[in-house]
Amino acid sequence: VLMAEDASLEGDALSVAAPVAPGKNVSKRGEDVGEGDALLPAARRLRPQDVGVLASAGVATVEVHRRPRVDILVTGNELLPAGSQPVGHRIVDANSPMLQALVERDGGIVLGRDIVGDDLQTLRSAISACGGDVVVISGGSSVGQEDFVPQVIAELGELPVHGVAMRPSSPAGIGFIGERPVFLLPGNPVSCLCAYDFFAGPAIRALGGLPRAWPYRTVVLPLARKIASESGRVDYARVRVVDGRVEPLMVSGASILSSTTRADGCVIVPRDAEGLAVGDTVVVHLYG
Image (cartoon, rainbow, N blue to C red):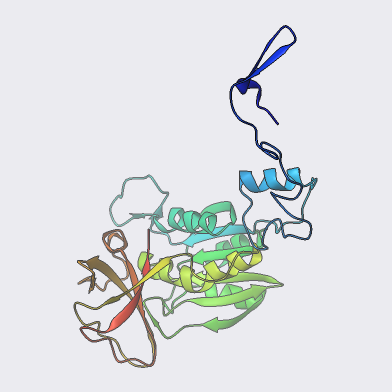
C-alpha cells in the first residue's frame, strides 16, 4: 500500500516518491491480538488503554469487582475535625484523613468519616448506622474506662480477635457484624497506620479483587544500626535508607506520626527474632 503523502497525481500520471515493498503498510490479521490470546489478566485495574483494547475486540462490557464501600469512624471526646486548630486539651483528627487516603489507595470508596464521642449508646448507634461493606474504627479499642468499641462490636456481632502480639498496634482487633468485617485500629496515629496495613488493607484489596499483598515496593539492604525487639511479638520499625544502608529512626512513640514522613519505609521484625543486628540484610517496605 502506497501512502498518500508519498504519491501525487498529475492528470492520468501517478508519481511515486518512495519505494513500496510487497506487504508494506498492510496490517496482518491478529497482529495486535491473536485468536485465543487473553486480552487482559484478571485482578487488574482497568486503565483507559485497557478499555480501548476491549472495545477493539468487540467487548462492550466486562464483569468487574465492585469497589468496596468503607465506613470510617474515629472515637474520642477530645477530637476536633480535620483542618481545625487545636484548643486546650483537644486535638485535631489526623487518623480519618489518613485512613481515607489508605482506603482509596486500596481501591475502596469511603462512604463517610465521622467523629464519635466516647459514649456507649452513641457508639452503638454510629456503628449500627454504617451501611458499607467494611467498617474501620480508630480509637477506643484498648482497655481504658472509655474504650467501649470492643464491647459494642461483641454486642452487635462477634469479636474473635482483640489484642495482637505487635508493636505498635497491640490493641487492634477484628470483628464481624453479620458478614461485614469490622477492624478495630488503635487511636495513636502510627499504631493506626500499622494496624491498617496489617489487617484492614489486605481485606479491602481482596474484596475489590486486588492482590492482598502490601502495595509497597521493597528493597533488600544491610542494617546500619541494630533494631531492638522482644521475641514473641512482631515489631514495625520506621527506617531511612542512607547511602545504601538502613537506619532505624531514633523514635518509638506510637503518636509521632511525623516519623512516618521522615522515614523512607519500614522493616518488619518477625516474632521469633530477638532484634536485628548491624549488617543483617533486611527487607525495607518503601512508603513512596
